[in-house]
Image (cartoon, rainbow, N blue to C red; front, side, top):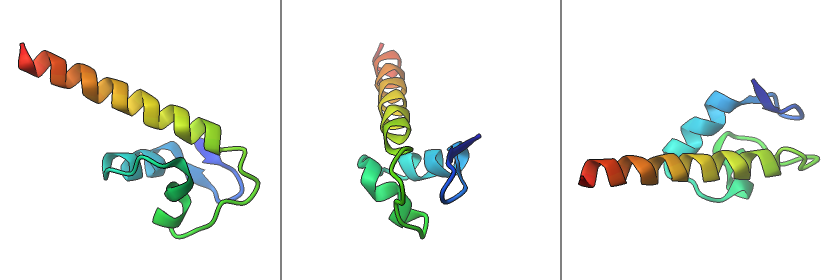
Length: 65
């Protein structure tokens, strides 16, 4: 699914950046070789980052058990 229409960035591309360790929504575009244009996607990117962190936290908790 497209998350950033201005730059035609997909959720998979953004998840790759997040999985690579990026935790700042404003830094995603430069990681993918483009710039933020209208900014409407930033809240979605931030939500994606939060969801990934929650999933990672749950995975770590399960591994500790």
